[in-house]
Image (cartoon, rainbow, N blue to C red; front, side):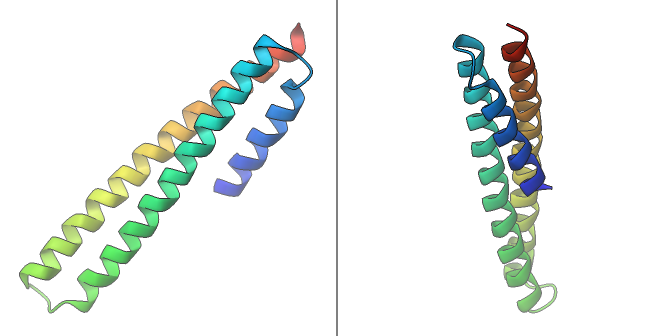
Length: 102
């Protein structure tokens, strides 16, 4: 999904390159979407790492609980960034459509 989103953003950015101001808006939105997507990927990796730490710790131990909590927070942050990336990709698409109309 991440690759599809980035590919769509890139395509929209290229489509908008023919126009001046609307193209700048599209490029800015595409950059934001890319940044948020990267942040979501980083948070997903953190969540996976913390999940592995929780699984390796003795069941019911404080370390296991702390790692599980950290994994949950990282997963939540990844979801927030993914949502922002989606919103930014939609804005990039709208801006690209506007750029091609003018």
